[in-house]
Length: 534
Image 1 (cartoon, helix red, strand yellow):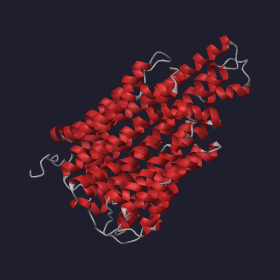
Image 2 (cartoon, rainbow, N blue to C red):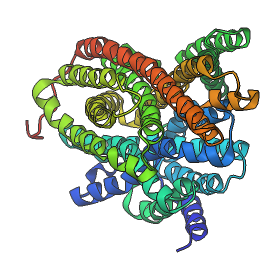
Image 3 (cartoon, rainbow, N blue to C red):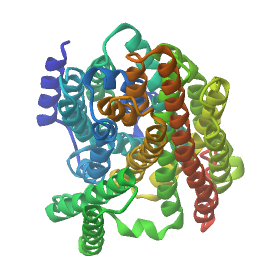
Image 4 (tube, one colour):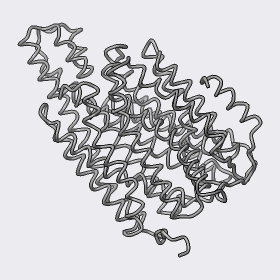
């Protein structure tokens, strides 16, 4: 069935849908619940894969579309910014209009935006398409997670389901470079976006049949002022942090945006306390476990996405691997990520959330520290091993954060609670790209421009300072000796920037290994039993 036909079918189903307030699929058969979970993993894999599949393609996109350094960062993180800004709104919308309905609408938007991104002729068009993908993606994550909350009423069964959900989330992040490498080996860079369309078509065809509808009993409308305030709080703060990281200083515009965002956030929180059905249930943060889980999700994604950005560039531009070879080199990470996500649900019953979470953060911090020691050549083994440790440590962090958040909220508000967790994760991912990416770029630029020979034209020097890929492109127009010198200088400058950025990520994870377990331990409830009869 063509994609357009599926979209039309989906819209007709939404109009004539069977959403019933309070309907829950918990009473369905075990087979139907797990079949529904299998369908819900499709958008999870896609949205997480889209974060990292672009990392393996960014050298090719830079060569083909020639974006500026600022445009390159926006291509990478505008998706996460829109995702972070809309998740809370979309999570609440799903509680009101129906979570499956919102899932299908968002899937149609995400698929259409992916097709637009695949054929974008300019950097500006690609940035706009990525932004539209963020709008669609914001509906997918909270919808899938909140549907799992209502489909699996038994705590032990729900923990296993969330473990699978998180394995798909983390596996998509690890799978992105592999899929990207395979596609770039045979097709043009737009194929990394176009691959989303057939998967979305399958989702639109299967979800109405296998995923039951659910919406909360609340019938009140979304508070429009709260929606505006949420945007006014999140987006200026993100922009201010990104700008300050790029400039290595808090400029007056960045300071003004940061102040405006903080003030809007204060007004937003005060308003939520007075609303009968708020966008954000502030009372959830009174539970230290909930606060620790949300904080942990944000810090984990902050560090993970930042290092994935550098990993793809290091393997291709420093080690000289092709996109496909670089993708194969990252495959061990996927094994560790997926395995630890499933194993976390077993370990937590024996050891408890705080110990497993803290150990995961410590392992990830050690891996990040090792990654920061990569040399400017012959570092392939160290890159693979350290990346595997990072993935193995962050995977249980994400699994347990999601489990705690979902279990803390009542079923009628699980969409909003899930959105809070996903907002923290996506906001952390966007800030990780912006902050860690900007730290590495700033140090690279200062080091490489300080060593560029004076006889290189000014235009070529500007290109050298923009990125490692551009610098290696300039070497093709220089004599052999000068080209070798410039390539070595650029690679060493890049690894210096990589070291500074990933060392920052290691410190963030080390702080999470101490702070988040303390919050999770405070008032900890007994871990769920594997036997429902207990």
